[in-house]
Structures are given as structure tokens and as C-alpha cells.
Length: 106
Image 1 (cartoon, helix red, strand yellow):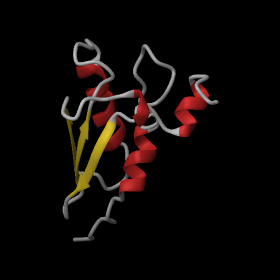
Image 2 (cartoon, one colour):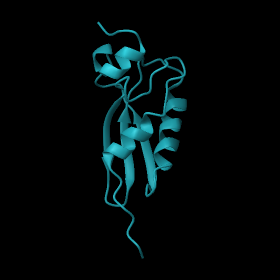
Image 3 (cartoon, one colour):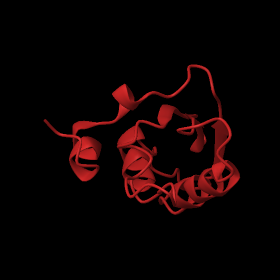
Image 4 (cartoon, one colour):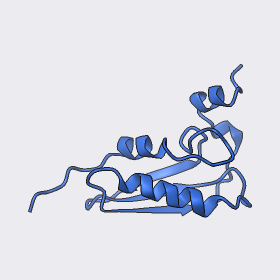
């Protein structure tokens, strides 16, 4: 049996840059919605993320799209995305790139 290459956090973050909140034209990484990425020895990926608002009805849609994006990475066995609200998201989590896309740069 050939051992698959170890999936990296960088690969996961790159894949998640293709996932968007349909209401905001910035990917979930640059919005600061991704809190944690863990990858076990069998290339199962666990992501902890949040939403810009706890009442966002798009949460399940965004989480499903995140799982699909992760499973497209070569070597990923499974993807698990958990949406959490602690700590709450704030605009300070938006990356410099996200700020530029939103017209928030100074």
C-alpha cells in the first residue's frame, strides 16, 4: 500500500480561499472566519470556523462548501467542518487582503 502524501495546512487554507460567504465578496480565509485547521495522520482534516453573525442562515451552506473544497485536495480522506461562535468573529480578524477587497484599507 502506498502512503499518501501528508496534507498540509497551507493546502487546506489555499482550498478554503475558494469558499465565499454568498453575501460578501471575500473568501472565508481573508474574512478571518477560519479559526483552526488540524490534520491527523490519516489525512482527515478538521476545521473550526465561524460566521460573521451567529444568525447567518448561510452557515450550513458555507460549511458544506468548505468541506467540498477540502476534499478536492489530493490525499484528503475526509473533511469535517465545525461552525463555532466562541470566540465571536469581529472585523479585526479580516486580513489585509480582505480589507483591500472590501475597500477598508486606510
